Length: 160
Image (cartoon, rainbow, N blue to C red; front, side, top):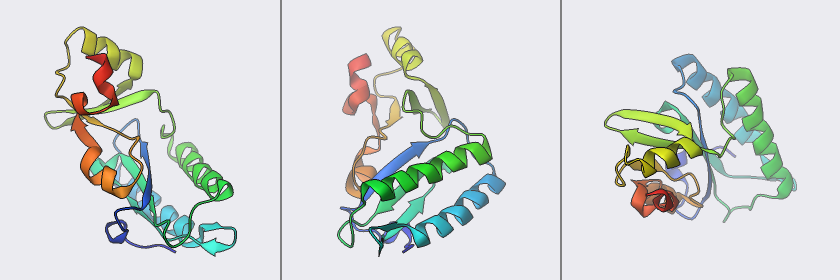
């Protein structure tokens, strides 16, 4: 069951997928349309899942699931991963590679391999207060308060 992302409760589970590049208007429309279809029919053990999608900065896909209505199952999570994999293929983007870091400098969003981020941090090419996107947030509450944080306030702090 599709609901607007902003109407999901704070304890809703979230999955954050970062794109290796900004998405075009046509790609955003495609994602919104296909996500609407997927989320309307997303189920766990035959029960509808109440879920929504956000696409911040035209490069992150955030799926939220109200688990107080019905929790995800292994099969439903697998279905969502297949949905994301299908988007990767159709749009020639990277969404599932967790070995990359996305961070913001001024008004630019940068996406680099984790090893390069570590090197930049060690060489002091990045400020420890650089804003990073902590895609390991678990629920909507964390997403809203801990997703965009200074590197020193996230797991990225170990590199400074």
